[in-house]
Image (cartoon, rainbow, N blue to C red; front, side):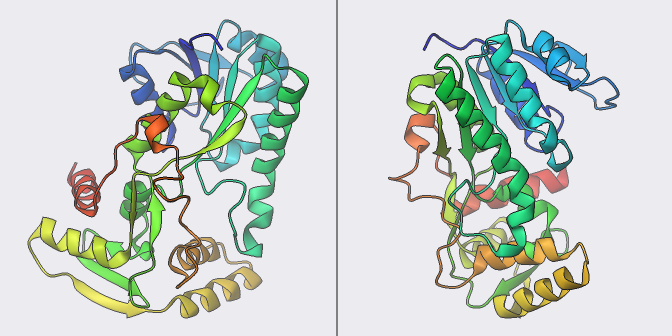
Length: 303
């Protein structure tokens, strides 16, 4: 496959789209942002922005001349991804990075999450089908596991309330999981586009760190030079609470069951891959430490 230079991105102002856009620009790609006509999002200066209706016809025009496209839209935009894929193929885009940025196709999720994951799988399967019929069109999914610095800052239920300097440790705090930082997510996309042949038509496995709650708590206490207030809880309790809320139709069940999956003891459910079995070397990703994570989260809260 020839070198990828021109890259379009959907969802450039989003939680993951913003660091991806910054990483692409820093790496020297010619980036174009595609957004809805009615979007009120703000974007970095100096990057071309195309406003288009999300129809195959309009998106084909918007994508013409691009070598690759990255879909980083939020949950509300997932239903438009098939149209994006159709348009990308019609426009001659060589690589479409599908919207995963989660646990990938082989994750052992709880049954409650199947309806949430189904729309993403529709797009993944569709991209695969098109690539089988048209060898000039290829796709990649990027599996990141837990978006660790973003998630810790945003969701204290994950175990760390940075502003209050307090923690919730589930069970014994030793269940390990893998995470990818926002910087790591951006680098993973850059790595895919720098190595198109090695990453085509598959999910790549990204990771910045493999850690556990106890290691993170120690790092936060070192970084803040103080002991944190620690509350003990159990994954059994949060599973019970989440399932009761799911049954009652209460939206907060999602986060509770996500936390359960992350810390489910003895399951290694949330380890995307060992370092050796991952694609970090190919993607040129940096291995980070619990201290790195603590510093990033604390700095983001201060800023």
